[in-house]
Length: 263
Image (cartoon, rainbow, N blue to C red; front, side, top):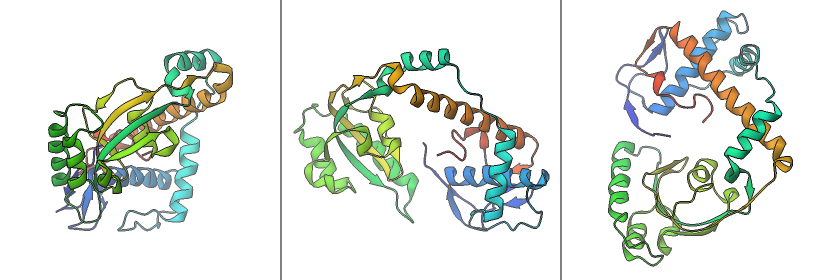
């Protein structure tokens, strides 16, 4: 999840429809999100699911009618088949760590919080510089380099404790944060920043307690849901690429969007 800024001098447009007001600064993720929403809104109009008089909000928030029409459009256009038991078993075998229970990770971090009005590009640069600095520390829980950086730079209350978050389970943190630290074997400072809804994190895994792998029969339903979701996301991306190929797009690159509308 890359968070970068785009100072919008001339608003990006989809088929001539502006995605922001002139001079509004949006992150690239926000801009792509609006572009994907507008592609779907216009497709809903073309399919007769939404009145052509539907107003485009300057803040990018869809009308209630547009939201309902887009839901119906996606329901019509994207049909997700039920995964076979063979596919589910194959997925389960390849992702055993994801279907274990009781895994815990001892973590500390340095948070560079993204707040309204912050220069996100400069913030990310500071976070990257800090990441390089702390990767040179000795790897101990009491290392003064990491602890000092957390105390002086982190926007999290844990900074006063050297960034320590203690032992965490996957349910203790935001899903996008959990995806970066659970189900792995590495210990030490992660080689790249972790991006979450709160900002940029420099993260160190101090220790791990592996979970117990669950048998396929115990998690078959969860595996099926995961496969359906993966198929849905792939199909939605393909549909959006189709719509984008038929549209006039200015000022936004949708090819770089990893999870349109599903972040």
